[in-house]
Image (cartoon, rainbow, N blue to C red; front, side, top):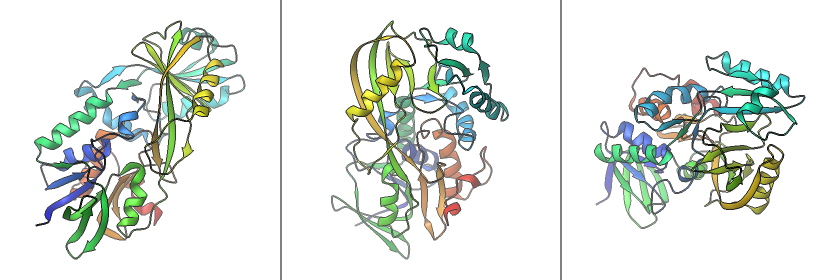
Amino acid sequence: MDARYDIVVVGAGMAGASLAATIGTKARVLVLEAEDRPGYHTTGRSAAFWSESYGGPGVQPLTTASGPLLRELDLLTPRTALTLGRKGQEDEVAAFAETYSGIGLEVDLLDRAGIARKVSGLRDVWTCGAFEPSCCDIDVGGLHQHYLRASHSAGVDLWCRAGLREVERTGQGWHLTLADGRRVNAEILVNAAGAWADPVASMAGLSPLGITPYRRTVAQLAVSPAAPADLPLVLDISGSFYFKPESGRLWLSPHDETPSPPCDAAPEELDVALAIDRFEHVVDWEIERLEHRWAGLRSFAPDRLPVYGFAPQEPAFFWFAGQGGFGIQTAPAAAELAGRLLLGETGGAVDPAPYSPARFA
């Protein structure tokens, strides 16, 4: 006999796990994961920071609203962040600080002397910066495991190695056939498939929204002098790099966004070389060795805001996708918002309207 559920969530990364944990006590829920284990793709490859300015003003309400739960779970470690500007970019850095100060964040403008105190060996080309004391590191694995445990405790079923083969709309909802031949019936289908969000929609007979995966590269370096433990997350105002210390090493990204098909992303040598070249133009530190490199996919809707809500043309299909590079830091608030929408509840800390898929109708 086919399995029957109220809600089937496609994807067991941070998005699917957090949403399942939120709704699991109020509905019969199944989470489908195509891989051998949850969080194999983007969730497992995050740069692991929580910054209220990261993702832009449209994402900030979700990040800020996620802070209390992350702190309650003891998953945030103070880091701070410093966004650097070159000579001639002083006005751009000041505008950045003004934007986020204007919505209640603490952002301090620093001159050359100020940024040099935050980052030793800083090259002369960097003249100004915006300092955010609230930035933290996130225990990504701890957060994902919290949601998986909470889902299990709530009675949610998780099936791994359960990729979709066919999706059929029925009078009662959806009939799903999995790659291994198992079949499932559901009243509501939730698309939390990350880089595969548009393909899942197409399988269900819906028009894709243009959610595009982009490859992001990270390299782990041993440097001399060793990166101090209190080094801020260092970014530049032009968005061409970021780096941060991690367990005595340095995590460095060229902040690349290369369009990619949904896949098991792998780093390109050129992107790693580009990251190192940009880093060498920031500080005079010696790179002793490249220890590790990896890549993940960040998926954006055309307007770069996440998509949360029922599809206007299909009231039994729910979008929970397009989280870009901020799906980890916004997970608690996003899951709470989406859970309310799914279950028809009101209230909540964040207005769902800016994230509705109806904006693309």
